[in-house]
Image (tube, rainbow, N blue to C red; front, side, top):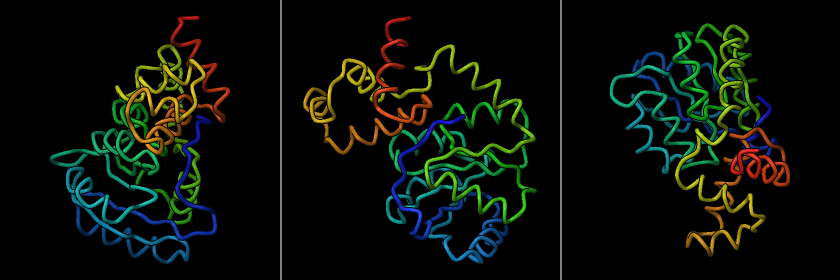
Length: 222
């Protein structure tokens, strides 16, 4: 629960939000409430995950605030896609559903936060700030499920990684630098940096040394 994403923004900057929910009235209501905060601005809205992915590159949010269940591409699929392709962007799941499948699915997909929709505006704003800065926020009412999910992840810490993340992870474990990894995989060094940031968050490590050790143990079966 202490994993940290490497954020795109500094604490002094305005936090850019993409709100994703199939109910238009709820999206507009969230926009109105959140924009009463001086440091929060809604830069885009989407009715489902597919629409969110289409507008995400243009609006460049720091945080995607999404419902879990939506027609078409739901919030869990959206979370996986954002984590895989936009690792500098945090995902906060805001939903009415607190069943185990939704909680486990959201966190397993890489969400940085999970809150229920009856949360207060102040608490939601605080949570958004926390995940934008690389933290993780879980609603206390689903903490038991979240902790159980985290314990399950420890048994196979590599299960949540994408194919490219796995390739990068193997080379981090060998002690390669970002430039060396980029050369081996024939990808941009910036892309490697983004994947390393995602690995730090997913494996709950605060620095590259701890990440390399954790990956070495996981890959060697120790």
